[in-house]
Image (cartoon, rainbow, N blue to C red; front, side, top):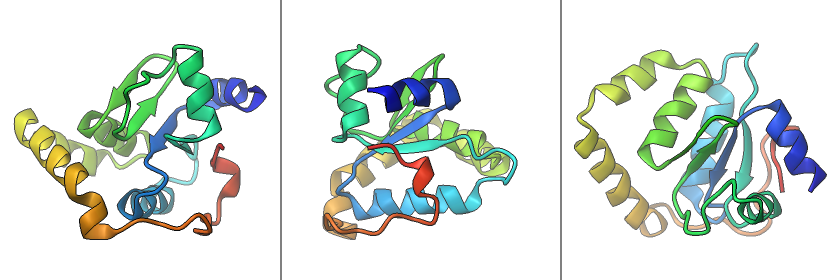
Length: 139
């Protein structure tokens, strides 16, 4: 529980499907793309201890099954979380390009990909190695 309190003080958390290969790849890409001085975004699986604790505290919905970006000010999910995460890591150009798409198109594209992600990209095993920044991952 102390980890979660520390996470609240140190910045935003991106919750992702821990068993999804596409999600793992996206997290690794976000870490690689993040501007060096920022490095505030932390990551946790939706089925992990941090998410469970935050659900108990009322900070996350029990029905969340899409990528979720938690900040002290807001909780965003789905395509909104993806666009906000790009802004947070300093990829404002990508975030702007993503934001230029009409919202219904962004939402439909996100939902379609989310629905088929396991079939298209597969699942990761329990022994999937963490990236080079393990300190940025919460249980």
